[in-house]
Image (tube, rainbow, N blue to C red; front, side, top):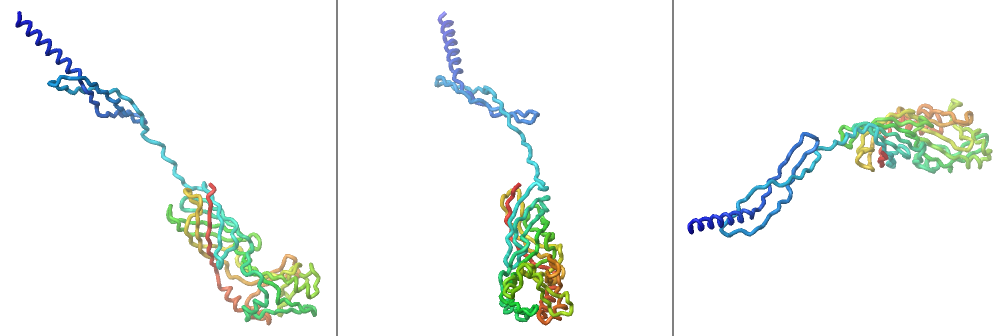
Length: 353
């Protein structure tokens, strides 16, 4: 009996200690598991934070680790986003610019120039410049005679027994080069700034006047007692056998001469920079090239017959026959052999669209 009771008591004690020891279990989380669903999203299961239950254990017992699956929390991650559309730059960008001429190679005073894209390889530019820009303002005949003594320009003119002193009359030299211009920039690469430029210059007003010389003779005519408002009745013959070879001022006393060339002047050049860039608001470009004007000739205007003026050609052959103007024959001959006029320009563009 005593043996049976002792065996039963020992069995109960061992069972109790074993049960008590197994209650001290530290939960070990599983590694993250990934579940991919066949859709547009990626489902990731994230284990919850494991909870460790701490209970005292007998020193002679060692707790065996038990793996318990953690509850899963699902999160959806977008696998992809829509790719941005490619900017083909087909007339969807526009910029306005201000041209700045280099002093010695101007093509007029640039008022505005607009540019647009036509693929990354082409850009179109349309510009407008003032019709007349004074390069040499307010120089007198006396000063011209000192600068170009071989021209032999007369300082006084006799007309109907009246002597007209034109030596102090002021002359101004201006350009009437582009008026309007249409240019096409061709880029060898999508991102390069270097470009070739082709286009044309034209002027809706005085179509073929490239350089213009104006002289104010109103003071000289008034001093010679000619009637104001009728100054166009005065004409100056050029000592030529041809009676049509003469010039006269308009009714206000302004006398005009000009260098004529082609009305439509082709342009060819190179440049650096893009007038329109989708990633920039302000762009700076530089252009250099030349436009072709044919064989330019010097003309004077006669307002004595036509109030709008009649052009009279000063060809080297005709000028050489004039005693007063024969010194201009050589310069005019050289001018006629210059087929192109060089220009340089800096442009500042601001993208509008």
